[in-house]
Image 1 (cartoon, one colour):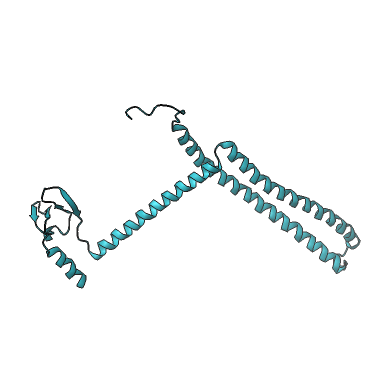
Image 2 (cartoon, helix red, strand yellow):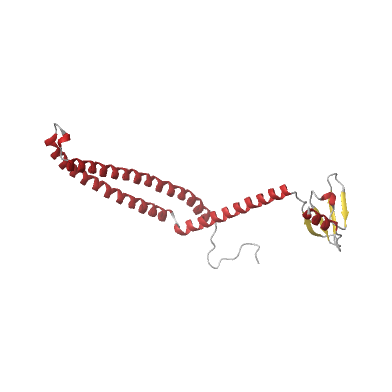
Length: 216
């Protein structure tokens, strides 16, 4: 209520030098020496004594309208920030990858690291399988009744199987990581191709070239 009274008081105060004008909802043009209540729901202009527009006054908003306007402004600010962040990432991409060769080289390096880890895992699986053959040879003595095999031997076989399974699971995750690397670099490449093309479209003047026509 207090805020409403304050707004009403401001609107009731005459202007010392301005002239207010608007077209109300019925299409009538109204002129006054103070903000026009009939145009509280629409834009009106304040003119100087010479007739030039001094300012434009937006419509008086309800609490709901103000909340909606504030939400819209936040969305617009978020979109501006998103675009600025996107431009920043694009500049960083161009600085890191000036051409496709640089991008291909980094993709190859990332994949090579994964391949090295997978090679180590494959080598360890081979070692574990060789160890398992030795355990299987020992188990030949208990082929008729494996339950008679020593507990230590059975435990070693179980641990060997789990070690092999663990490294096989690791290989699966590394294959998934290779796919993620390809997906990331493919997405970057699509963006970079657009940026490289945009760069090629910008003319580069040689040193000492005259300015564009019309510039004097």
